[in-house]
Length: 121
Image (tube, rainbow, N blue to C red):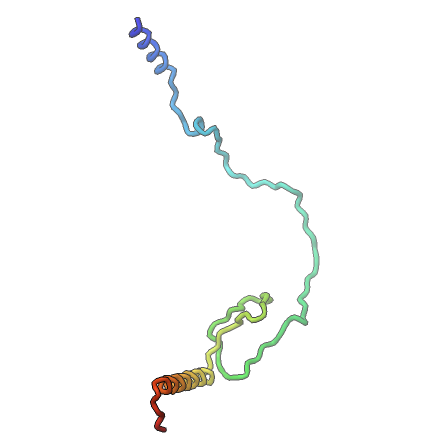
């Protein structure tokens, strides 16, 4: 008797079984994205001008040419200390090399003094 009831119960459940879908498991529906206007659209007309007292000309004190421009948009807002451009100048390059050689010379003299070696000019 028990066997008959079990067999009858399994046949009944298998015959009424449905395939589970993802929408059934999570109870969510997929909807296509649509563009909608949520609020009212307002448009205004006006005339804007640039404050010309805030526009500056830049002149360098040495010859050279610009390698890279960091402020590459017209009317771009620049903060104090921000780099505007990179410049190559032979004069500045030679001064930097000269400063490096002077620094190396002074470092060598300091090392000689530390080792208590006298400098023979």
